[in-house]
Image 1 (cartoon, one colour):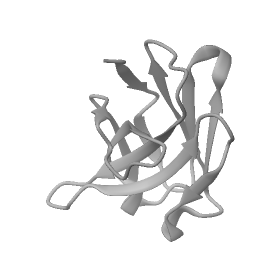
Image 2 (image 1 turned 180 degrees about the vertical axis):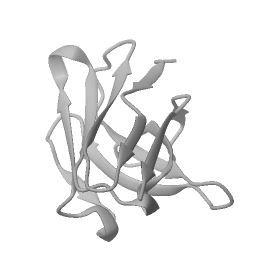
Image 3 (image 1 turned 135 degrees about the vertical axis):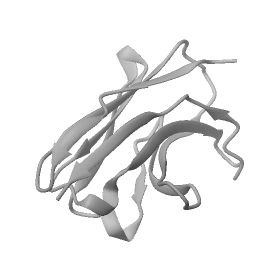
Length: 119
């Protein structure tokens, strides 16, 4: 199974920016979605954004629209999440994951990277 490794988390003040990366260990020929999720302490994991690997379709949750941008570099097998104007409520463990196109099941997950936004 393709391994996913997140990086780029850290501590930032409110209003600041971070860029998360998710590197995949191999390339597949079938199409799939790659996405970001987050989980804050005491809360359920929530979907943040996704991108269709071959095609580029993207979607976001409303709370990050206009602040976060998901992108990918096919040559590097890497997905990114540019996070601007961060808010304390963005504090969470961020995970990347993949699901096959046509499936609703996110079946491959990374280990996560912590994002902490101070007020």
